[in-house]
Image 1 (spheres, one colour):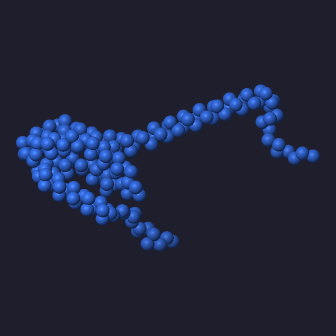
Image 2 (tube, rainbow, N blue to C red):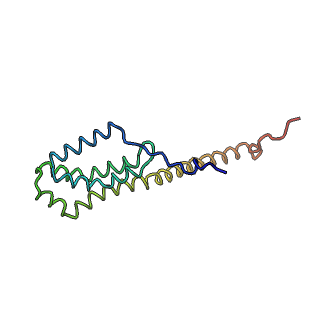
Length: 162
């Protein structure tokens, strides 16, 4: 009979490092100070990254990092536009009301999800084809050696010599 302790163990969750918390708080405070209401846009636009952070429990959080960087690439043009024109509500409404904005922002995050899902499959396929090419080359070499030396070269001296 298994221990009750073993069956009720929760998966180990990683806590955010103190350095990362401080950087996140500083970024939020600076963004709030300079963009004011534009901070709401940044938070909503970065939601895919927040979700990825909480779902990716791997030691180095590579999935989160991929999604975060892609999501940030989608947000940066609009972030720069808000920083350029200052914290005006008219500019923020123009950005947030345009459907292309959300398509670009969430499409970039979607590309991060696609990268983390499809890239391992592509790598596996490429490595598999490379190995198949090597196997065929070795089989051609084997046939060439068999023609030169004869079929008895393929027998491995399993019988003891007398």
